[in-house]
Image 1: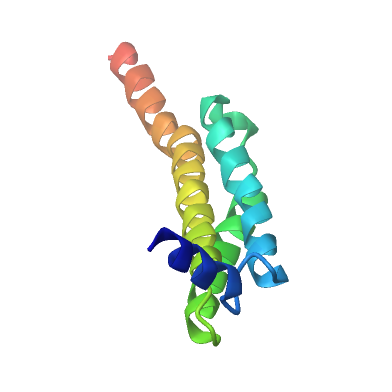
Image 2: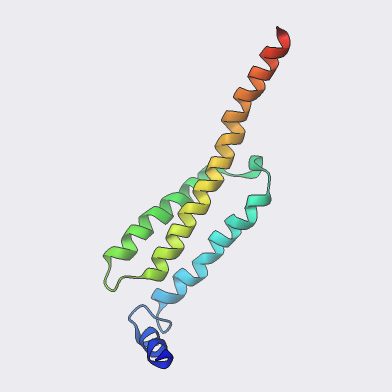
Amino acid sequence: MAASKFQALWNHPAGPKTIHFWAPTFKWGISIANIADFAKPPENISYPQQIVVTGTGVIWSRYSLVVTPKNWNLFSVSVGMACTSIYQLSRKIQQDYLSEEEDKTAVEGNLV
């Protein structure tokens, strides 16, 4: 049973014998790098970079389900890229805009 599943994966049109498998597999490095950056301070996050990674993830996740054969490896890595970059953007937005409002209210409270 396991041998037939492995053989089906091996011979799949988007399987390990094709670039359609290996390109998305190496693309996981971008998501892993984003996950590693979760520990870094938000001021080091780049808006343009994270917007591009989000856009790439959304566009390629859609494309991976439209092409024949469906490339589930590309879909999963694209969703992962979009999710990690959206999280990074939320951290940056929270630090840049929401924390400033909290700082302003704290300063205004001290002036009263």
